[in-house]
Length: 304
Image 1 (cartoon, rainbow, N blue to C red):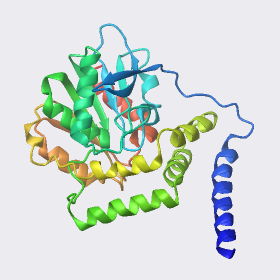
Image 2 (cartoon, rainbow, N blue to C red; image 1 turned 90 degrees about the horizontal axis):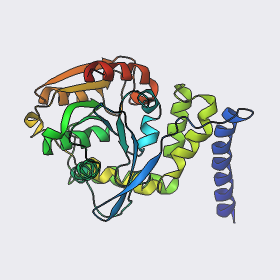
Image 3 (cartoon, one colour; image 1 turned 120 degrees about the vertical axis):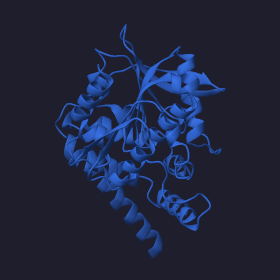
Image 4 (cartoon, helix red, strand yellow; image 1 turned 90 degrees about the vertical axis):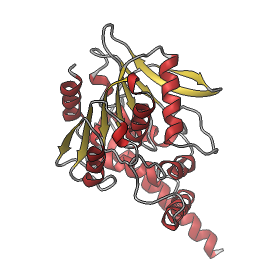
């Protein structure tokens, strides 16, 4: 009986905390959606993949690939509006993310790269600029290696070439087990942490709080997201980075603890035609917290 009451009280406290975190920021404020971009589902390899598109005649499309555990809108909601009326773009929900196909079957960075290439073929895109953030940067590297003629210029935001341990190591197995346990015990921890970061860093205005909260909680079962780490961590591009000749801009944050600056610089050192830019006071969330500076760098590098 005592154990049952303890569980009930603990659950109530967590729920109360979650609700108050949201309510304290939104009461009395008219809520808005930050950007209205229509999307559609494409059928690739008998699976559904969601894309958001905006086209301007005579412009080369920018393809945006999001970070792990996010989606095309959640990652780029502060960046896409700045291009909606002046340059074509395509933002894709990667496998097991957003509104795209979710599967418990094994997947990896290279598979997501193949999916993106197939999506762009379906959209009749023969040339594009490619912008990837974190996990999206790993997918972008793989795409550029597989199909260099498709990519006019490449932008990598907080990239990594590997995560420091192999899929067969005990450390990796411990990581996977820890993530699984955490997601079972605290299924709202990830979205709550991201929401708290967005609010504290002023990346989300008060009138967008409801949208941000809902976007972070709705997309997929958190366990599917977390389990994706099993397939992101084994990525290792060190042996083939030198094959990439595409002109590249690498952007990293001086205060990034998730993918530290030296990890991203290691990627730069392995590439042949790269320019590096460090946002000194930025953490991992550059598209959220430094969107204006990011867009200025994209405009300069892509010559828009």
